[in-house]
Figure 1 (cartoon, one colour):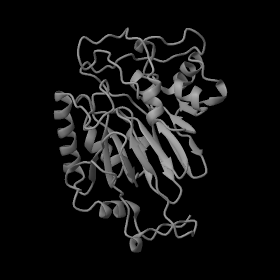
Figure 2 (cartoon, helix red, strand yellow):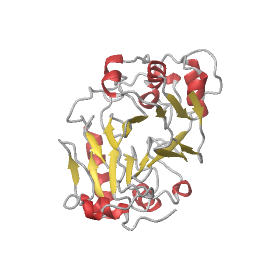
Figure 3 (cartoon, helix red, strand yellow):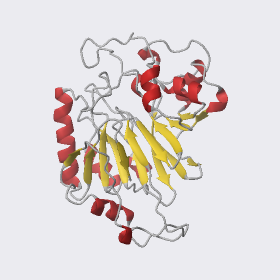
Figure 4 (cartoon, rainbow, N blue to C red):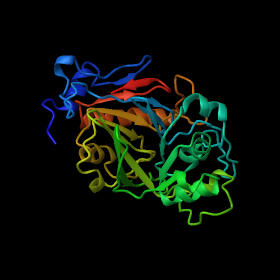
Amino acid sequence: MSKHPVDRRRFLRTAAAGTAMAAIPVTAAPVLAAPAAAAPTPRTGTGRRQTATLRWLGTSGWRIEVGARTLLIDPYLSRYDTGLFRPPFNPATELKVDPTAVAAHAGKAENVFVTHTHWDHFNDVPHIAKTTGARVFGTLTAYHLGLASGVPSGQLSPVKGGEVLEFGDYFVEVVSALHSRNPSYSMAFPGVRTSPGIPAPVTIADLPEGDTLCYQVTVKDGPKMFFMGASDFVERNLDGLKPDVAMLALPSTGNTHDYVPRLLEALDRPAVVVPVHWDNFETPLQNPPVVAPADADKLAAFEAAIRQVAPRTTILRPQYATPYTF
């Protein structure tokens, strides 16, 4: 496999020149692309560089379009109130789906990738799978929950980390990861789903964490994009990924040692970092995204830490449903 004559990560930084030292509150659809003269030479010899267009669906959710093909990461669009942002939090909140919101933003996906099975990541996945025929990739817990929710087994593909899945125009590397820690060094709804049968999940507490994954989506002759769904990781598992664009989860606490320095070093300081999981996901999917006051402070500190560790990295703070082309 021949190497590109121009380093793509440097190329993305150059394309975003003038914004690398600050967060970017986006109101339009930016295209982070190189001038034609500087574009890398594709391995196929077609003379064209392939791109991907991403739309943030809130939390850690993404809609990704590679040509005419669509894939989803953690699509949670129903966004209902559990008391998480307006206490008291109610673990017995019933699961519900807003089919109008899902239809407006999810598109016709061929594949759905689930990082873990908490409700703000998995809630809408069974509905999407059953209404579109999309294939769902996730942990064995995601597989069992999918079956219990009525998704046909032929649409469910359990993965555990280490897989490299080929889809023609793109391929996906599955990375074993960790869930973030709350102030008590624990997490909400820990555990796994060990049975594929009934009962079907009814409340948000019926959706355990179920182990956590990350995914790296690589477009053939195009960008490498890394997606987190929770704010912890295994450094060794990130070795060699070297993404161009990294969607990194806001840490909910400081309980993970040196989260930003270790993470950026393990990913080889991506050209572009996109903070995710910082919005109030129990408010409507409308711009500008709502940020809880405590999370606003954490987000500012997160971005400052990124700038300190990787001053050449562009920080892109996304807006909902806005197309970003890499």
